[in-house]
Image (tube, rainbow, N blue to C red; front, top):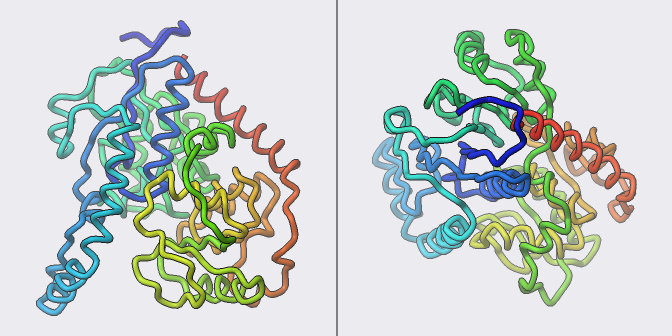
Length: 376
């Protein structure tokens, strides 16, 4: 395997969070695989089963902290079993249909012992360098495995936080410095790494934004739409201000709400709960909504792609990626912190999507140019 500049088909293996059954993780993996294939490469996703990551997405998940927590989790598992299983099955079906997976690796030792053969390894996107999620910066996600002459690239890798613990800096430096080409998803990530890594670091778009509206339209073509107009609400972690804004907007517009939480807690005017929707159902619901209110980065991404009237309440810890994206596209005013701020804006005002589209096309070209250069 050589690192020549010949623009020929490369065998590329991606390592990411493909076993995290949430919309962002699955759709960014799908988009990166699809785009690299469109660039003329043979692409697979390394079926690495991160035990820390996978645990939170099991259909049955018991809290053994103490007897009270165990009993509570048993009751919750019984009550929500059908809902959780249906959601799990929809995600599993999407993965089986759309992902080109390697053999399964149940841990780092298996991956290092028998790594997949490829010309290029790509780590990313997603928070693959967030040590809190992966329980330490893993060799798997920094590509410290496999043949020495394999080219190693990070695409839109995210640290997920605005700082790195001082105790971890040496680990980050030692592992990430070995990559041939480094790109991250957020400006904050670039600033952090530039303190101790001397190689060039590029900020690129999340893979979901490498695909166009037409690309995503073709994926959801023929899917059913709701009979009545609605507000689409999507929250990652519980957020009181998000609930207040959703209820306020519903009251002002008279529209009911479709949301994704297992419980209907806090939301007053519900059309239906969409918790069991698969990845494409998530996109379809955003596309056909009148308004979108979310705390999620990827709900923001698809709202932009489909030119929706949307509002985002950025996550207090990991919200930098939302602000980065909105700043690049010059639509910072779509981020609100609380209901009082939301009340001061005209929620019915249209976004100048002609301008946004041009800015996005420029950013998309920059990101595609970078990844093509890194590969070839």
